[in-house]
Image 1: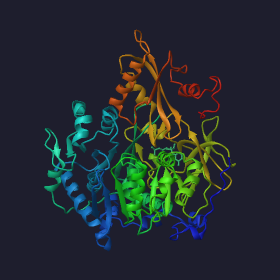
Image 2 (image 1 turned 180 degrees about the vertical axis):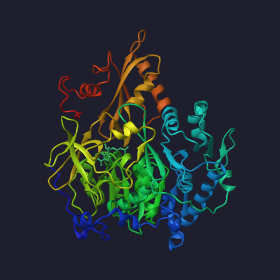
Image 3 (image 1 turned 135 degrees about the horizontal axis):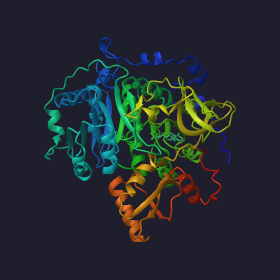
Length: 587
Ligand code: AMP
């Protein structure tokens, strides 16, 4: 079915879009100009994310402006002005100093969307140690792996997450010097061998001077998954804030009076770049909801908080579609003026539905952990082709490429031809390394391009269309899951000889994690064993990573070199002839 084009005109704007003339903006854009929209540290001390998000607003009327409104899952509403954020983040920076944490040391946070997380993130950046968020739905194994790879010095978590997921790991984390605990009711804690968060920050000063920070100083460590091997720690620098700021201005159309809601969890890159950093550099108000997805709760928030810009994800939008348009009509959502989506393909149906339900279409945009910020987008002033990710941002060169026989990279210039999506490096939020894995990092580049691992095509008007992943990573409810991490844990169960893990298509979550399992001698497939394996994986990996389905098989197909042929498993799952996997993603 052809979805046509959603045509935009001046009558659609509540405010003049920041990017009104795409071609002109591409011609005139420079990263130096973008840098000048921020302040830099006083006295030429470089650039620090926490200065740009918080401190630079303190000598302006923004000091008393609402920076963050936190909505607790039990109905609490806590407000933080820019001035209050400055004091609290100063306190945490001083606390790190007291703990003898050094510049560049990794400070991890494992927590849900609680206000302390935002203070810790920004305090860590002030102190110039490295902020590393972990998704709170991870089980002990993904937590252990990521703490170990990045050699965490400090872990801040809540008392209940500590007791459920971290305590049992402590002996295997000798490098971890401090565990700081936040009370589950935000109160005091008293747990042996841990530090209480409240006492820690209450005993520190609320004044702090950010030390000179080089734009290339490491700031953020975000884990992402590949097909093989352990998760990869993508490293981002303080200078990335220039891209966070300008991409939000152009692709999310931030204006000074906006009230913005990013529904992403800060355990993932969207929740940091656009859930923490970009709204604050822009001096706007950011709403943070601790609660889980619930259609009525979400519409209630849009209405009561008078959200103007809403940044969400396809899985959530599909769940809203399922709840139906009648629910939407119960709410007054007239404050909304711009809707945006990221993380997975946004089906054209969802774009068309949102136009009907809200009077506004969702604007899809594309980026990934490694790019640190939005690269391709449907801008406010642009006609939307439902199903397309949009066009590259000013300052971003995107191309479709293919590998030639001799291993070099060739750009495909003809329209509508499938290839790998590639970007010319050079924007400030480009990742600088995979932590401790120079070879893996090097492999991402060829012929002057960064190779994204996504397959896409570009139409004759320069709109990019997502086709699929080049590799076997799984996207489930917006989260990238590495099959290897799941296979490895399943293999630790005494009944399992081998396993192969794929993403099984799902109408809401895009994919669900499905495992094919070969049993050891002496074990027979049974419903009880299947349930036991599901529970085992869930306990070790956490709900987001663990398989939702397990199927017993007698063998897992492998290549001659021993690699699991996940694509063949997927062909079987999809009912395609085993010899014909041409409709699956290409190599
Ligand atoms: P992550 O690094 O976890 O943010 O995941 C990045 C990956 O998510 C990309 O490489 C794509 O495969 C997928 N992705 C992100 N945004 C989109 C989008 N708008 N359309 C299709 N896939 C997307």
